[in-house]
Length: 198
Image (cartoon, rainbow, N blue to C red):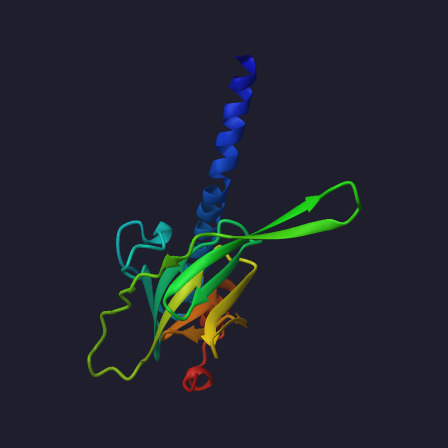
């Protein structure tokens, strides 16, 4: 009985660890985001209660950054661990791939990839409050934070399933896929003439 007294809290901490990681990372992102927006004179607007910790399946985008010439409508996505891979299909589905390293009697390490069940991406609402006569650029963003190991696109070509790597700021279905570091870098080094043709 005494053994369970120590084991159960340890198991609980392990189960909650991914969510603690998300919580800490999001707080850190918010502080950096707020500092950059204040420095550049941009307006940061949360779009609903609890927007900083919004789940992926909530359809409304979580926050908006109003720059001088660009409006960023941002929806959070999160990886439970940095070793996972996010794969997005052209049919609107996505799935995570877990990576697990196993060692046996030999010194070699065997890396297993375990795909999770595919899920349907919601039709996210990226609508923003803006002047209808505004000429500002509009960028809907799926912001993966905390970040994963890599992004991939899965598609079918000539009846064959294929995959390709996706980089940060690449577009799929009209949405920019982005890491927090690249997003904050754009805000911090913001130059309308540099990004206007992107």
